[in-house]
Amino acid sequence: MADIESGGSVSSYSNPFSDIPKYTKIIAAVLAVFYAFGVVFPQSCNYLALVPGYTFPPHFFLWNVITNTYFHFSLFDMISSVVVTLIFGKYLENVWGPKEYFKFIFIVNSIASVITFFIMIFCYYATHIDKYLFPPVNWSRGVNEGEDNLHGVASFSAAVIGFVVALKQLQPDTEISSLSVLGLRIKHLPALLLFIQIILWLGTGSITILYPLSGFIVSWVYLRWFQYRDGTKGDQSADFSFSSFFPEKLQPVVTAITNTLCFCTRSSPRTTIPGSSFQGSILQTDSKEAERRREKALQALDARLSEIKQPPKSSLSVDTQREVK
Image 1 (cartoon, one colour):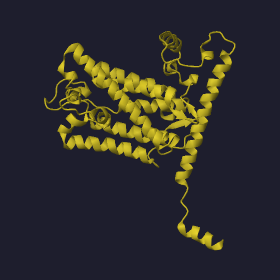
Image 2: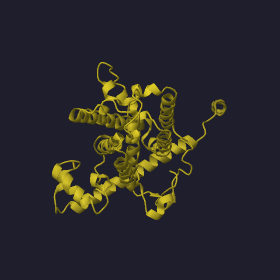
Image 3: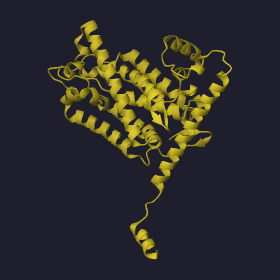
Image 4: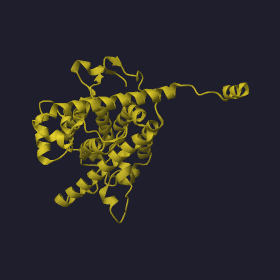
C-alpha cells in the first residue's frame, strides 16, 4: 500500500495503481460511468439517486435504494471515491478474493442506503417537510436550494468507511509513512474519517452524513459477527472490539456503555467475568487470534501477488515436454 509501512518495512504496494485486480477496476469504472451519465443526462438523478418520494408508489423506483450508493453529484467526490477504491480496494480484493470483496461492498452500501432511506421517511412524517421525500440535489453538499425538477441524495462514503474498518481489522498497527510525524496508523483512520465527516456535517447540514455513520456500523457488525474467513465466523478479538475504534482514554467509558446496553459486546462468557483468573489468558488469546488473522492475510496477499507476477507457461513449451515424454 502506498506510503504505508508495516513492522518497519515498506509494504508490497510501492505503486498503488499497479496490478489493479478485476473487481476493483469494475467498481471504479462503475463510479466513473454513473457520474458521467449524470453529467450528460442531469434528469437521471431522479432515477439513480435516492429519492424516497419516487421509491414509493406510484413511481416504484425501487432500484434507487441500490444505485444511489454508486452515483455522485460532485466531480471531486467521484474522483476521491475512485482513488480510495483503487488503493484500499486493491488490497482487500487481493486478501479476501473477488467474491468476498464484492459481497462486502454490496452489503455495506445497500444496508447503509436502506437505513438512510428509512431515516428520511421518519424525518418526513415527524416534520412534514417535503425535502425529506424529494431532497434537492444540492442538499448533498449542504445547500437546501436547487432546481425544482432535480432531486436525490447519493454517496459512496459507506463503502469508503467500510474499507478503512476492514483495514483496521487486518493491519491495525500499520503506520502511514506520509503521516508518520503524527504517529498515524491504520487503526486511527475510521475515527479520523468519521470525525471529518461530522465536522463537515456541522458546517453544511448535509443529509449524506447518514451514509458514513451507517457504513461504519454495518461494516463493523458484518466483519465482527458474520464474515466467514479461514473457517471461522466473525472476529471476536479484543483488537477489533467496538471500543477499540475510540481513543484509549475513552475506551473504558465506551466499553461500560456498550456492556450496559448489551450492544456490540457479544463474546464468550469467559471474557465477561470481571476479575476472573482467566482474564489475562483470554486477552492473550484474542491478541494471538488477531495476529494469526493478520499473518494469514499477508500470506494470502503474497500468494495472489506471486500468481499475478508469474508468467503463464506457453503452449509451445507444454507441447515440447509432451514430445519428450
